Length: 354
View 1 (cartoon, rainbow, N blue to C red):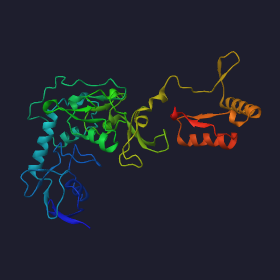
View 2 (cartoon, one colour):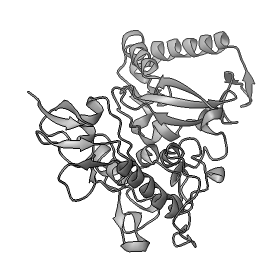
View 3 (cartoon, rainbow, N blue to C red):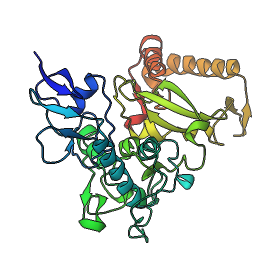
View 4 (cartoon, one colour):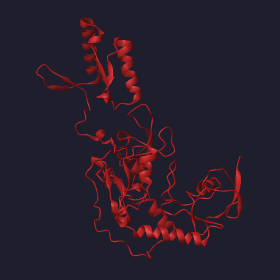
């Protein structure tokens, strides 16, 4: 059962408990947001989603204001748009937001909103960010540029409410406010598990993938959807490919089963495929200890003959197998089937356990 409210002069249904943002979107009205993160408790931190509510003393944050029956809401008045533009200008002036040298150029929500509102000059003095907090890049996966952080809180919400790692939080006060890990430790010294969800949800260039730095702009890459091969969950990924090479991996939003989430393997462990040490052809050890290249048929025939000889001499339990964590789930299934049904032993394990 739904009630109604007045949205831009039109009677619009809503479900009790909905916010103005949710009800407006259901009614086909888009309200811009920066701090809002789907599935998390709204904070109303950025004020970009402000709207007019009749009878209210000031503009209200649509993401955190519940709808009530008969409420009159205006989302597109000149007053609302002036306020949103001012809030965006304040955010732009709060740090260092030079898009030309930013790794997130072309994939930045703040940049998108500045473009939408045609902001070409700032009416506020740009804050001088004299290395109050230097950029952190001591870990192998994530770069944290505090001068580009707008303190929207999306990374904190993602860590605490989406993946529930509870590794990061808001710290300090006033002009020294920052997002901290633990007791303000670097990522690699904290409880962070490097799932990268904070990078996924960051709307600016404050959090970026270290391995992807300088490898390609968003408009230069092709996004290819695939399924993560690391386990049987089946998380949906987007491979960002440039010139036939993966430059980074992100999660597919609103896709089952992961809903925009990935683990450290799914998000960051892809570059092993380009290792110079990766074997590209079978090798057979000769009597003198040296290896020689062989065809697949030659190598597999040798393995099969050795297995048969061992089974005939010592029985099937003299053989054990370890399945590779970097192979697809179906390969691991076939591996255990080979050992249990063909060889006749339960000595089969998975290297992820080690």
